[in-house]
Amino acid sequence: MRLGVLDIGSNTGHLLVVDAHGGAAPLPAFSYKEPLRLAEHLVESGDDQGAVSKTGIDALTGFTAHALVVAEDKGCEDMLAFATSAVRDAVNAEAVLEHVRDTTGVAIAVLSGEDEARLTFLAVRRWFGWSAGRLAVFDIGGGSLEIAGGGDEAPDVAWSLPLGAARLARQFFAAGALDDDVIRGLRKQIRTEIARDAGNLLRAGTPDRAAATSKTFRSLARICGAAPSGDGALVPRTLSRSDLSEWIPKLIAMSPADLADLPGVSPSRTHQIVPGALVAEACMDIFDLSALEICPWALREGVILERLDQLSVLG
Image 1 (tube, rainbow, N blue to C red):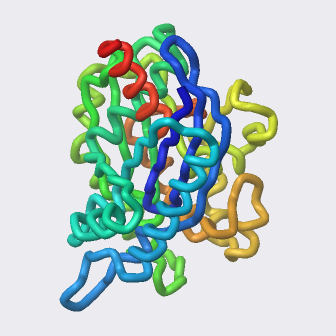
Image 2: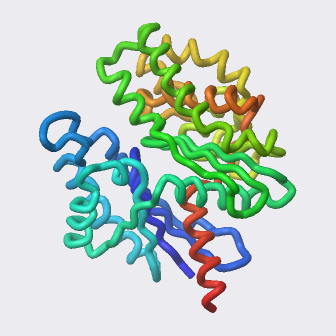
């Protein structure tokens, strides 16, 4: 069957059209995305503090309407639409999604942080297989960090933290200054929040395999020397803690233009590179991981795989 997966993230709206059936890897057929940056369209003060702004609502509604047309043009028989941290945390989330549904006819489900971590874990498990043993998975999004671990297809532990790269950039770098005090404060907040629940994962011991997914980790791995995306998904890619720690001071010292010139970094995400790098380094440090393997599958694939599993049971 041909499915459309509409992923409303904190940074990007992404429609992925895939050909999928049980027992086979989802095959991407078409991709359409726009930089919605919903995490940066949250009202910061006043009576509407914490709400998605009218600009953000209009951007989301327009993108969803066009994505529906694209999905129909590409022959999708079903579309799975979901939103993550930026919409999940908005105080007007219900009204936003009602407006989108009334305007476009598309019902967008809001994933909990735990479900986001669980579905990402499922995708990574299917990618690496049972030979991965006990698996730990980390995913830095625009609004949140997801962590999950376990030895089966469903993780034993899965949780979400408000440590997304866009969220932290907005909180700490809004003035544009990356002085030592700001960096120290950001680093402390990141490590305190991760360490608070680290025992969830650490109690079971060192994982047999540790993996990372999504754009921030892919960009950091590319900066640190991993193969470009053009080499294909099957090329092994890793992010080394030592390489990342060596790069972080350089990233802090770079201008946005210099950051945009780095391999794997898009101009719209330059402000997220430093906070993303600090979160990635903290994950590897606190969980004592010398490196993370980059998995090309993430949340979208997890949503697809779960739907195929459900159809298999029903059929």
